[in-house]
Amino acid sequence: MSSRTVIRGGLVVTASDEMHADVLIEDGRVAALAATGTPAAGAFTAGAFTEEPGGTGTPPGGWGRVIDATGKYVLPGGVDGHTHMEMPFGGTTAADTFETGTRAAAWGGTTTIVDFAVQSVGRSLREGLDAWHAKAEGNCAIDYAFHMIVSDVRQETLKEMDLLVEEGVTSFKQFMAYPGVFYSDDGQILRAMQRAADNGGLIMMHAENGIAIDVLVEQALARGETDPRHHGEVRKALLEAEATHRAIRLAQVAGAPLYVVHVSAREAVAELVRARNEGAHVFGETCPQYLFLSTDNLAEPGFEGAKYVCSTPLRPKEHQAALWQGLRTNDLQVVSTDHCPFCFTGQKDLGRGDFSKIPNGLPGVENRMDLLHQAVVEGRISRRRWIEIACATPARMFGLYPKKGTIAPGADADIVIYDPHAEQVLSAATHHMNVDYSAYEGRRVTGRVETVLSRGEPVIDRREYTGRAGHGVYTPRSTCQYLN
Image (cartoon, rainbow, N blue to C red; front, top):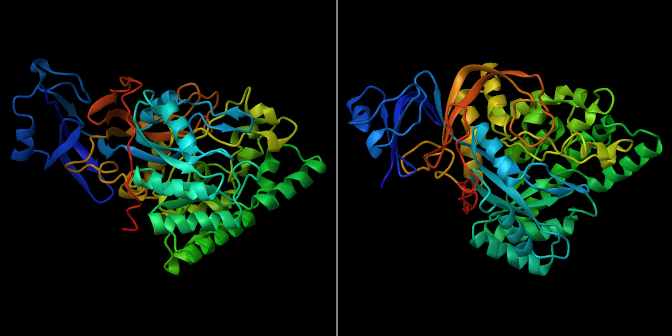
């Protein structure tokens, strides 16, 4: 039996439009939109059962559902293009599984994640990808896709890149950081970029000069500088900028596009601006932690700063203005989370007495949409830009649009009913991520997810979780849609 849902009376916000419209959903996809109160909209609900505001219960007779979204925003589900569920790192593993992490994502209004499968040195891309499929399959509450971390550039690896692009894994992450783990030298990076130029793939770059950073780490520890705050001090902004510049120039030599992940420093933003002004196919991503947190957090007393250890690191507050400016001018196009949570007790504390042993990563998949809405409330970005950087652009960047990232006929009915007036306090006591602290503990924000549909099915229903592990399906991707 076909299913039908109507979302009625809300303000539909996409990257391009805002309109008071009713949304008709049939069989998991958006079928039509019509201005609220018009005969066309009225036809959506002819013979329907009407329920209480915000409701998604099933009416008698199997007709479907009517959701009253009056006074609420109707948004495309968020697309988080950078997560690390069950990621092994630093002698431990990220605390969120695909089950807990995708459930938390849904609570935060995100309905698609693109996670990173990992190639181990000496192993094939296929082996790494298969391992991540095994972790995710049957466990996700929302839809998911994969990027591929390339840790070992060999001739066999380059051939496999072609095969992965053909089957919908169209982006490859390399690291200029972490020597001995994920690090690629300039020659390996150039070879992978040349391959991507041929096969249509997109190279994603962790741009930090890891060789130089390791020297500074060694020197800091030798001086007895072991506290978490020194993590930020040794991973200098200039070394992020230098690596960003080098990655851009290598991409230009290869004739390949480049996507720089988790940009945190104003000097790195300046490199992106210069390259884009030269006409280079270069894109930049930042994350909420760089927009809302700073080295003040890393310097919290005792060992509390360990909660905020991530790479690239948090920067002094004065860097935030350049990131917001980059988002407004579209020199930074995407806000993803780099969600890679490690519990404070039992994981982060592996680095007591040696900041270099603190697992790098922050929890955030549940907080991104709300924090960015707070930026709308504060006038930093517009509502449509909010949806552009959190939904539409990541979907286009990673070959998921218009299936994901918008509300339009034919799109998957990944839809969030969002209350722009509700207030909440972010806290580990109330979040759903499988981690024992919140990076935003005690922060008051305006706006909250009320109901979330994934392919038309309610995952969050009036602030109750109604989803299930296994509803989310793997979603192959086309190539970057900014290059076609």
